[in-house]
Image (cartoon, rainbow, N blue to C red):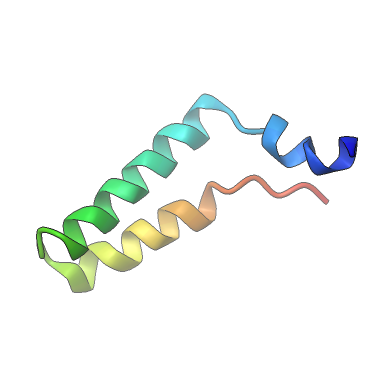
Amino acid sequence: MESLLVGIKSIELGNVVMLLIGGILIYLAIAKEYEPVLLLPMGFGAIMANIPLVF
């Protein structure tokens, strides 16, 4: 059970901020239609790069 929580415990403040920024970029791309071709991959990449991986 302890090994399941290692990834969650390794999240830092910078990760949370960048996850929120990625979510905002995706929101702007889809809901507000501000440059969706540019903002959607940027938001997706920001989220994928800041998910903590523990090997």
